[in-house]
Image (tube, rainbow, N blue to C red; front, side, top):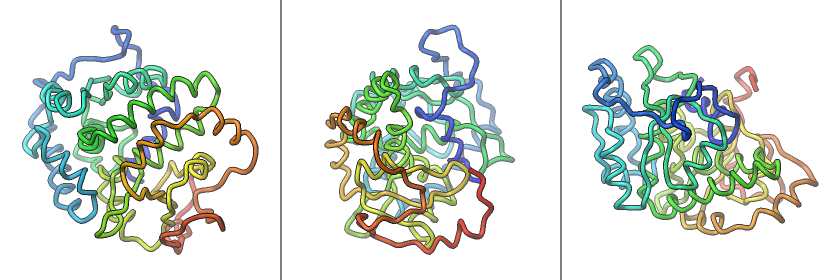
Amino acid sequence: MDVNVAEKVKHGLAAGTASAPQRPDWTVDQGWENYTPAQHAVWKTLYERQTKLLPGLACDDFVAGMNRLPMSAERIPNFEALSETLMKATGWQVVAVPGLVPDEVFFDHLANRRFPSGNFIRGAHELDYLEEPDVFHDVFGHVPMLMHPVMADFIQAYGQGGLRAQQLGKLTELARVYWYTVEFGLVRQKEGLRIYGAGIASSYSESVFSIQSDSPNRIGFDLERVMRTNYRIDDFQEVYFVLDHLDDLLALAQTDFAPVYERLSHGPHYQPGDVLPTDTVLHKGTGSYHRARPHKG
């Protein structure tokens, strides 16, 4: 099981489990000076193998964002330095939190252009498995795309929408949008399909699987189709929804979800492996990977 499946307990999918800190917004000091040489070495291992892997798999905007940030293999990034660069580019900042936080806290941070990141890093024995997202997932996976103005606006709009969805009892449906875009989204480029989702970009094995495997379905993005579709929390995704262009997220950010929620209260919901006659199928998967594995969730 890859580290990205820990996202099942984050980002509006379930409340966090960390003990409430003293600050009302749940932020803590990053404690950058407290990282040990061994922890910096874990970051170096993860960073080097992903940066070698992602050219040709990640979208150009992800690579460009990463190259513009004060981020290198040698040490875990300092959130203050990241925030200084982000603020100048898109008005975002990175804030440290002690672990998973309650939904309303998470949404409020996003709505105010603050990205909450765990300040801990996994151990050297768990490079590909972790119970909850750490600083590598949150910073390496998410922050490069926050340098892109469209993604920056979209994630802020998601935070605002999350607060409303909580009040309407529609958080499950909205969380599927985040899952299939910000975490596990693909986008077309002239060279082919490319990764922009953080859950893929921070995962060594799913980076390859999402683009190169014959097993998963790859389907053109349609909002209501996505909001009716469950997702895998135990393994690689069975379906990836593909944007024609990252600018398509602008329309999503401006969507009035009230009538969408009303339509979603009726009609079917779909399993991850379903392919519908109305789908724009870019690749019909063989399903071989998941058939060969026990279903856990």
